[in-house]
Image (cartoon, rainbow, N blue to C red):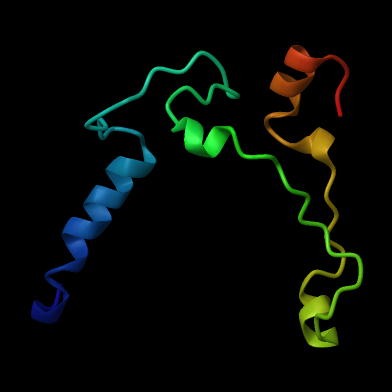
Length: 91
């Protein structure tokens, strides 16, 4: 290890421990499910949800190319199981 690389080792050691989930968080909130929002301020949870779909995209062709082949299916999301269990059939 070179002298100028002294700072890399502590970061890598911490990163490894973090990825292995060996670092205990200072606070772990209690939640009842993946959809539990009790730990969020009501100021935010009472806001009306807004759809962010843009019908006529003004993105350049170069930017569009970055997303070519990308698809989104809400049924594939990690919360879909919780949502379907809470609200009926999968969305």
